[in-house]
Amino acid sequence: MFELKPCDPVTFRQQTRRSTLIVAVLFLVLAMVLSTLAVMLFGEPGGDNFRFNVGGVFAGVLITVALVRGPFWTQPWLAAAVYGWQLKRCLMSVTNVMHKVTERVQVNDPTAIKVLRFYHLGLTQMHELDANSSAQAQMVSEIEAHKARMQALGIDTEQTRFDPAWIETLKSV
Image (cartoon, rainbow, N blue to C red):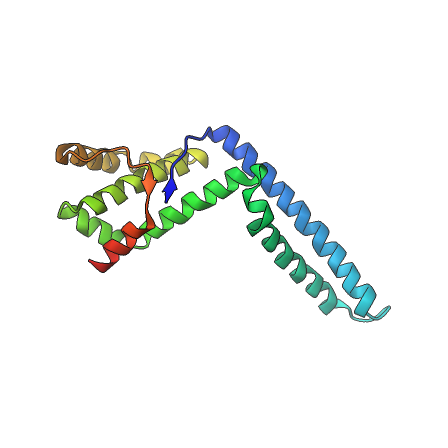
């Protein structure tokens, strides 16, 4: 279950820039050290050591990914980036079945109506966090029309939680 959290866009961008810089520097250091070690251990002085350099960079990528997805994932300095990544994953899972969602919204399926409202709220937050107000402005009328439909049907418009099981339900209909 994913839940939208209130985030200050300026703070969010600062935190994600900082975590991106930390991960990039970590990768650069790992790639350089591992490439140097590979050349020192397996290379030939004055020879073609390209494959050892590439191997060191590849190992740096693997270790960086393992660290980010492992011990770093729960660290406070990476929390904003993790939240942004999870939000975008949820939105993408809805986008992938949007044809089913809109089809089911037309017949007043409560699950589809909730999924679409979460999608609108999540997309609004994502645009705010990314400072992409022009994309958001294009959807205002659609969002307001859907909100009015929910109110008319007596469905709560504050759909800040997303259950991936809803997508499976919509796929099977």
